[in-house]
Image (cartoon, rainbow, N blue to C red; front, side, top):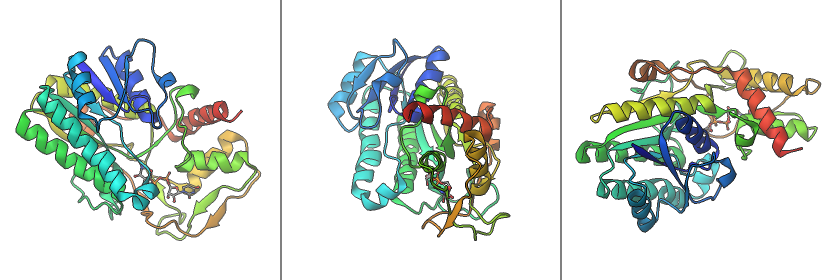
Length: 322
Ligand code: WQD
């Protein structure tokens, strides 16, 4: 098989490229380089610069590289930006996917793996979120991911494509410092930024109905995200009738207070007290995956813990902020 990985030059995409290349898969990357960087790609992996919204580019890349499977990771992923620019998010994430799928059907691609998100669940009122927990996204970002899953599943069913939608929980860490996250949009890099500026880390609310009052999330190492893609791609290759929706998480909840404590420990900045501010609008108290289905379906489970995520992310941060 030859796999097209869209968004392969981005933070998560480049980890998937690395893992699939090391797993012996033949790969080509399509990336518009809006946030991706070519230096993230390993030697020998071809890069096509362009967008999935451009049908001519999609058709040419699928044809020239004789693509038989697609891993679609390209997309916009900032919640606040999606609230400010819903039309842009629907265009990039839904119309982009629709265009790619149309090209895929036309080119006879028979395997399709889609990056989804725990954002499809919204504010789940359960201890562990299973794939059967009702989806009720609370922002346009989550809506575009849920609509994307519907598009993928429906297209697969009608056009004979094996499909998988992978719902990522809270991604952190890096395989190497060079592959670290460039963005400062999530808890771990936001705390790094505060600490390195000599400021107190912010805790958005400590009056949630959780044991220490702060929000609980399921943090997952980006290398584990990548190995789940390798497992899913192999499953799709072997099972032409597959139609999967799977959480990628660890099934372990970690509070903001616990996470900030680990970050302070790893960075050696233990002398400052975190500053509790108001709640951030739209934050659910607790979102923790059940990781049972992916274990059953793919025999996959996470290898890394939270400390390894923070240590590897810190090495990446220091490289970017010498
Ligand atoms: C985690 C917790 C914050 C920064 C988002 C998207 C989700 C997915 C991952 C993309 C929350 C708290 C944060 C800080 C804090 N997106 N926090 N102080 O919101 O769980 O998930 O990113 O694919 O769809 O919603 O992640 O890292 O922003 O926040 O207290 O300085 O940390 O309130 O409880 P979130 P996050």
